[in-house]
Amino acid sequence: MTDLVFVYGTLKRGFHNHSLLSSSSFLGQAETCKSFVVLDGPGFPFMVKKYQEITKLPVVGELYSVNKSVLAQLDHLEGNGLFYERELISVQLECGALYLAWAYLLMDLNLAANAPTSARVDSKYCWQIGGYNRRHRVTSPL
Image (tube, rainbow, N blue to C red):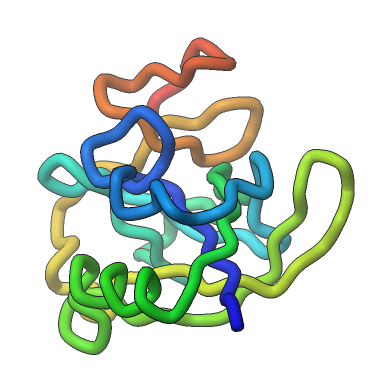
């Protein structure tokens, strides 16, 4: 049995934690159906449901099908239940297909105190180290 996982930070292709997904199936580029806030942490992002009065936007990321072993590794990496909390969210692939997938959301907003918001790309949050997305140039950081 497999689970679907939506990743939006260092687990994406080209980033340093992506190797944890090497045995998983990449289903495509996706974005969240609901809006969230993405904050820049120390080398990784925080996705939160609400943060102060900052505008919530859809979040761009990638969708993977993972086995239970990989999901357990991701839970360990993300500190599931301690730092991030794994929650089911709705995501949409570029082709329009809708899925329920796990995503890791920051549990304690105090951990994100004074963190800047991530860059916006086409009115969506798209986290990239250095503020650059391979498909789009970031034009308006928050």
